[in-house]
Image 1: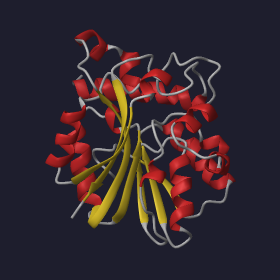
Image 2: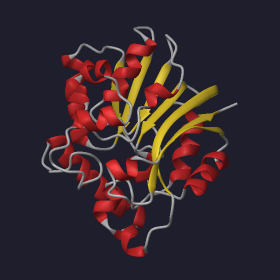
Image 3: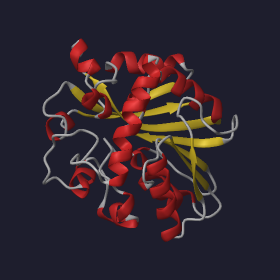
Length: 252
């Protein structure tokens, strides 16, 4: 098996367990303490009480930021969420773009898709759909999307350049991305890179900050750093050399 298939297998297995609630992980990174709730994590990374209460079942405490808070969403726009999980960011985006807008969540994990679709039906979101797919091969037409969002997911992809190139493909001219992602502030050891728990926990596959930004630019985007959260290292990642990078990426 190739490295890409191996990493994808590890990530899929982990997030299937999270969706089934068959794990003691309280976030993407195990070890933050069993007493830490999804609500506490989400509050710490920028979600309001109102946002968390919109679809409580969709909040699994998996993010490293709130991409909805990073930019402008207009009524009637089409939004795609890369690695949509149980759907919390899709539902928040749907409120922003209104009934004339459209939100598409893309996820590779059947258990997450099932959970997200159930949440959409339960809460009456008719302008949201969830598609199975990989974020480097999006099941989306060329130049059909106004906004792409992603929350602590692109670091999980083995080929991040392919992710950003495909995002560039599906965005309309003038389209934009709002991304929260984990990046490294210092290089990991080979053992850490190979650790399945760190891979699934958004650390093992992360890139150094400058390397990450270079990839986004290489894909054709103009970039803007919107915020850097270094405190997340202490609150969720046991002091590892990581931070949450909030990024705007624009297709001119």
